[in-house]
Amino acid sequence: MPIKALIALMRPHQYVKNLFLFLPLFFGLQITNLELLIQVFWAFVAFSLGASAIYILNDYRDIEDDRQHPKKCTRPLASGAVKPQQGFALMIGLVVIAIVIMGSLSLEALWVLLLYLVLNIAYSFKLKHIALLDVTTIAIGFVLRLFIGALASGMALSMWIVVMTFLLALFLALAKRRDDVLTFMETGQKMRKVIDGYNLQLLDIAMAIMASVVIMAYILYTTSAEVIARLHSEYLYLTAFFVILGVLRYLQIAFVYQDSGSPTKVVLQDRFVQLNLLGWILTFVWILY
Image (tube, rainbow, N blue to C red; front, side, top):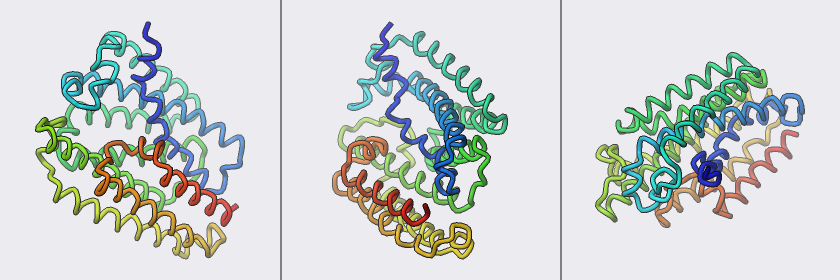
């Protein structure tokens, strides 16, 4: 059994996206509550396993396309390191374990997880081939992460967090599509059918718009009277410095370095982004905690 290849098939490096489950605790000033933290941790585990099942489904569906892709051709199913039947068995097992764990935490969170799975199955079979709906579906997936984190911990979910998460995820998804268009322009191969509905002009404009909206939404959040009263601080606006710098850095990576294909890779490998994110967290913690 190719254990290493099976683990790679699950894409554990993508689990960094699932840290969004902890945001309701963080913004709700309960991140130090050990009992709630453990609850969300198990929700994180369950969601990550469910997400891995979806990654396997996508890889299974895209085997032939991935074999033609200059980067994705090394994926376990596309390269032949894992047999399709092995991947299918792992996918079913992951879904079952994810449902059992999430159901033991919260039935409401389980329903949201099931909604996420159904939405992503629809994405794998149809929605990813429809321009604009593909990136919107990805963004909704991040919002569902927030709801699972909130339901698993019993925390109220601020409309500001939902809006900003959706906008930021949409911005990153557009950047990923831009990378797909660049690959097509360089190689002449369509790695995704959906790129027929995109071009660089549309994506550049859309990214610029979303970058502006993300920054403005965050500034409105930090200066909102309701948020200031709830969090008992008038200095949250100071953290906008890191948000603006982070967005500009990502635009630099996309437009100057032409390397925005994997937001996860950027977070895990770009030192500038890492230090900026750390600065945002520490400043936020200092102001609130």
